[in-house]
Amino acid sequence: MLEGRTMTDQEEESLKEAKRKGRRVKEDAERLAKEQVRKKAYLAREQAIEKTWKANKTRRAEKRASEEMEQLPRDQARKKALLAEEQTIAEAQDARKLKAKNQS
Image 1 (cartoon, helix red, strand yellow):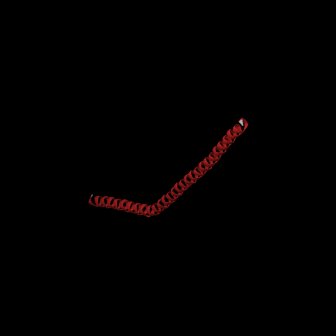
Image 2: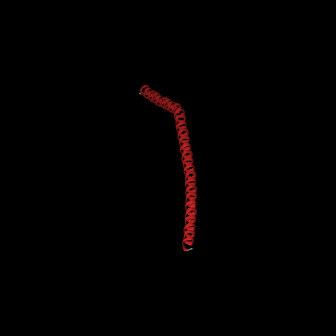
Image 3: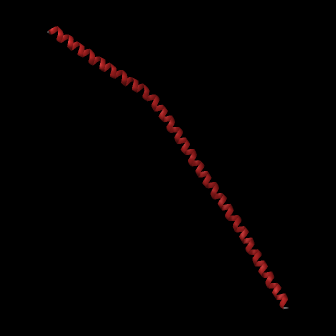
């Protein structure tokens, strides 16, 4: 009888151990699944950030190129106006010199 009782205790202990192992396996599987979901979400966020960063970089480069193309004609017009102004000043100086020479 004592042996039968011990066997029952052993069986109960084995049953408890089997349940613990089953819970542990289930918990491990759930933990791994949650970790995979977190990793997927993290990678998706990182990819979205990178995609946005690349789009912004491209947009800035296009804007810079557009501004440079617009700036070139403005610079040329400014140079042309400056040269015209310098020429007008030089002609006015020449005219004053000629006038002063004629008056002397």
